[in-house]
Amino acid sequence: MGGMDELISLSRRYGGNPDWLLAGGGNTSWKEGDILHVKASGGSLGSIEAGGFCSMSRKGLGAIWQRTYPEASEAREAAVLADLLAARSPGETRRPSVETLMHGLFPQAYVLHTHPSIVNGLTCGLAGPAAFQRLFSDMAIWVPFVEPGYILSRVVKEAAEAFQARRGAFPQVMLMENHGLLVAADTPAELDRLSDLVVGRISAEVKRRPDLQARAADASAIKAAFDGLSALAAPGQAIHFRSDGEILLRASSPEAFAPLEAAFTPDHIVYAGHEFLRVESPAELAGAWQAYLKRNGNAPRIALVKDLGAFAIAKDGTTARNAMLLFVDAAKVACFAESFGGPRHMTGPMIEFIRTWEAEKYRAQVST
Ligand SMILES: [Zn+2]
Image (cartoon, rainbow, N blue to C red; front, side, top):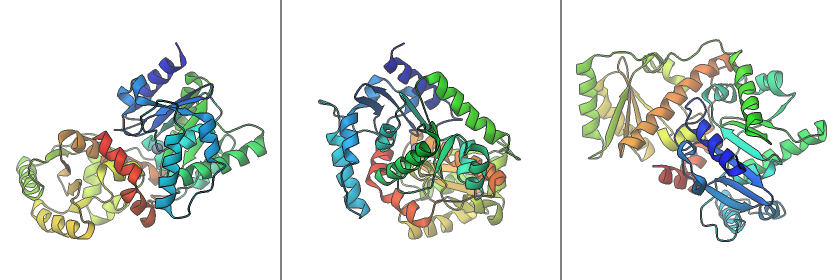
């Protein structure tokens, strides 16, 4: 197989496996001489074709590190985006992934960036950094949560260069706080080995696994909640329902819900919204919905009802299904984080940054 075929096959394999990636999350790349083929923004890895990759000049990407950019995030990201677009190969018209600069830093032929919920149990755990030291400091780098895009790439560059100075080789594995995993290697088989090794070491530390067994709930109460939500949501919105042990646990009380009170990762915000709604009964939905609208300026994507389950409300079936997938992922992360010191959410300013970042709006818009 040629390099592009290998890239497509590995992208589909990880993109189509919910243990590794959901919806439009994650990205992959392959280097061919001076060209970096990196996932274009917005598409989904699970069904990607050669046309889903954007061709970049590695020399052009390298030149970005020689420049200085404005401090203010909006002006900076606009300037970096202009330079990224200018670093595309001649004739390229697609928009590269927001994580393109980061892919370009790694010298290995293939880069695979995923968001496995079990890995994020560690990266979203209060004791995550300590667990990383214990389990991975021999082979990997840790990057703290910073603004995605240029700043994240710069932090990765510094951490990778420090690792290289210390150990004589560029790192092949990176754990990203409140975000996910990146592995880099010269063959897809080596990417598989590294990814499995990371998940294996983390699995061995997990004390409780999420209870995803479907549960039956009272049909008339479900119907009451459905009708209530249909009346509250804009006309024509799709509503999906799901109930399992983990969802019922989180819906059971404000205390049990607390680990889901703020976002864990950017993907949770992009697909499921930055805040979930929880009520004690269908009768409380209307009041809680209005209060949510007032507080946030937009309607909730996810509503939990005690003893029933979770409802995803969105403009169409695909968007509602993705919202539910990412909500369930957040519930899994919350569960796994119990083994790593309990949950640590994104900070308020970082949540705000993702909510308003032009690149994430673009991604959310393209992927639906
Ligand atoms: Zn990512």
